[in-house]
Length: 247
Image (cartoon, rainbow, N blue to C red; front, side, top):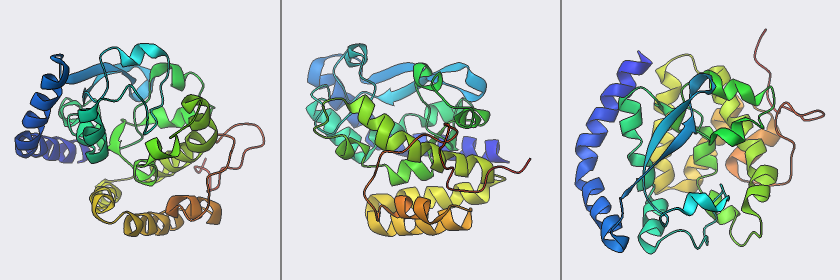
């Protein structure tokens, strides 16, 4: 059922979205006369690799700098790329990966393979499902670039402030995903986030409560409290902030 749903929405999305994606691809190409697409390896379900397709928002070879996280003021992002990232057009091309069965519409965001090698035992569960275009964490941290703005070490700041909470929210989805009802709700909230972010965050927080998240995780989901350094789920001494998966 989920695969049929994903395939149908991805096909319709690519057909309808082509009226926006094609001009965007031309704009990217005109800026530096290089491919408008960015194709790179990402961790697949089960820990293998697949080739993700994104609309390119950075300069050519920007991924060779050794920095994986992207701040809002990252000089590697092109002028056209800033618009693309702000509107999330770079994510729309991943509907092709959904169509191929490499991704789902909803699921944990796909990570670069080196990052998954640092996963805790708990975070390994993120690789038990297809990676997705959106999920709880994608909505809550849609402003990731702004959080990292001005950081001298975006990767270290990401690991300390963002990864621990993204992993918890992604695991909350993985442990509660039993059909497309939750997926439909998250797709609606993703669309709402583009129109009224605070309303979307409030609804995400309520959903986190319904799924078993504690008050701390609910507050993070609503972004009612400042982000603070936290250990990733599964690390020694780390709190999970929601009920673990039943044995």
